[in-house]
Length: 387
Ligand code: PLP
Image (tube, rainbow, N blue to C red; front, side, top):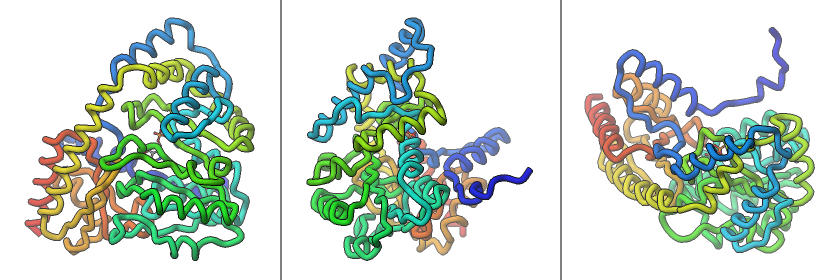
């Protein structure tokens, strides 16, 4: 079968491929520690599961409006406003199956053939994939280890041209765990406003912060009307498999993105939407507990990696990933990732899965128990010492 040529431009997310490989090895009896996939190892809080069951019994089993159930959009608008000290209205919210479709839809709705999109590299691989798919020109901005994986403002300024349509900002960042500080975010906002650039602010990890408070780029002057906020429930409430997220959008984008919803998935599952009302209104102690655990695990993994010869690791300020430099091992990122899985039973990702500036690094997710993290660290140490 001859596929449409546009499919050549669509990339993928390596985490799912490595997960599949690891599962195959496990089926053969190999013990694998999973540090590849970006999802909390906790269960969804019981009250949310209960709310979903009740919603199913109450008949929330039908199509709903494409942008989301009105009461859910209203509650999300409140939550998004409270979290950022802004006032969003419910008609700016579109509920989507996970946060990911907001990337897909925003890029499809905004980027013309030849438009340039600046995005973090290393960064979430779907940004680059979608820019290419839409016919845009991907313009990677490097995140530097020496700047705790932040970008260089002068480099960013040099990347802006009259064709720059969109700038993607992801703080806390996947895969590096970096958090952009307020003054730097303000400078980025100024650059976007002065050059009439739309910003996609991927804030899916905003609750996973180990220092300070979350700051949204939407809060700076002139930014509310040019910022697309991507947020959701997957990570914070351990709901990755439920598929629910949302965009808080500039008004001009609400109708086009709703139309993309209608054309693709129709709507987000109705009972899932009802369940996130409980996520927002119900007790938050399980979320707090999960975040405390992540903090402990971060300390274990960073200390452990830094004690392995050939590896050095920046302490991440947010998210649940570390992105250690492995150049001192003498292996490339791919070589290390590809051999650790079969030879040591540790699944992690090559830094190059996050773009060209990921060479020399690997990504480990610490969304696994302290015990498993220690086991993985021991295995990596042993593997490297034998080489
Ligand atoms: N944005 C980033 C940076 C992510 O890492 C992820 C998931 O891994 C998403 C968005 C998508 O989240 P969801 O599962 O809600 O679609």
